[in-house]
Image 1: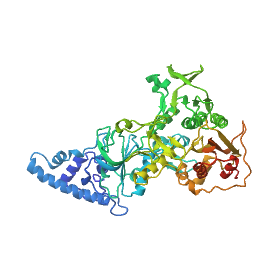
Image 2: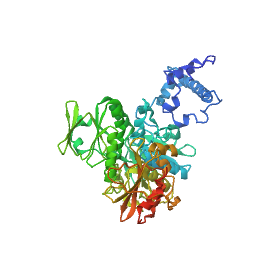
Image 3: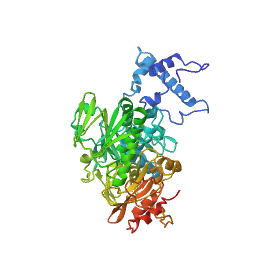
Image 4: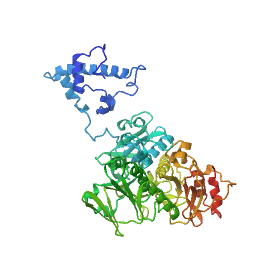
Length: 596
């Protein structure tokens, strides 16, 4: 905006224009201070660079920059005559200010050598911890080092709402309508929420900075330092490891070679969503391997396109039905039929033996002799916790559950905490666990942040998780939900209000954990209900809504709420109490499942 003045504004002196031409040869100086590596002490402060007069954007910035560059130009002219008689002032300044050239792609601003709070990983757990730290210590300086090139974002919409968007540019905007119709971005906060990395050490009142696209490759626990992939070293006072996990692959696919790998998606990040969305528009057939949360959600999402665009969607898995490791058999079978009604060709009891390329198609051979031909494969077969730092840091990895082994306060060492998918923690009610869900990342990240600022609180607030098979069928769960445990299910007829869409209309949020985790179990008073006695389901029944209790030694350790929403605090209270119940039909009444 300096090099293209509005009509009537006096022209700058020719020698200053020469200097501006040197600094900005294409006459675009508007992003000079943001895109160029200007030393912090030479940058305009936010106050000075702000608008001087309402309605006249950038008044102060223009004035200060003109005055400052005029002075620099005058000094350059004098120095040029004295020190470089053969050079003009513009050329001399270019030689002196050559370090202000645009940063090379992939480079980052100056990283502080020390930070009070270092968070390794840029996902949900790290963001929750950062907010928790700042809530308890408003002046805290927090640095998030993230291997992901994007700012912290929520993952659930990548396999849920984004697929149901009618916006043709959804892969770029990453904005979506929640089931309640409200629009939002998948990013937790806009870029303006974060402090520039180079300003973190000096900015007033601290803040949260994100260093994207960098990986911590070595950790010196005794020296309180970490080393990044580019060789940068950072020391810290307190550190959180929230490295998450990486999608598992199938051995049969890993052995198949590069031609198969090129047609494989391991779904986890924004780029995976963008790539799969593009592929779904170009190919005729996609096969999803995996019958768990992610596989079933993607099957339903892509099944919608099967009806509208002629895309063939196949889902295969070794279990008897969808969600077979979580839901009791009768409900798993019902879920499988629901997925089929969404337009998906579901193949249960399918174990992959080999994958090969035949012509232009992939051929999946199953152990029972069946063959499946397809154009692209999505492997949704679980997550492998990222624990590479354990070796250099000398941290323990749990041999049973995987992940960094931590105590009930999520501590691995006196000044190191772990949260999210990578934490194998001790649950004071349910024992040693590792959980891979969004709400656990929120709960554990928040607790780690509190404990990093001195709270010394154990993990007792049970996180929940949810899965939606489109806007009309969904469930929420808490505790240990394992189909190998004894279960008791109590169901009732559903109404129009008993859908994920209706639930989000009532709560005002599509990411249901944002509201659910605010209610503490101790706040819920269990009382008897006069509702009629619910019934235990029979095979073939249409399971409208209900409660499934999971038992261990006659004590409820897990609960699934099927098309019942905004009742999670009650379920949390039941698990926290850890009592035996003679009649779970009476307990089911507490969820008011017979309300109209």
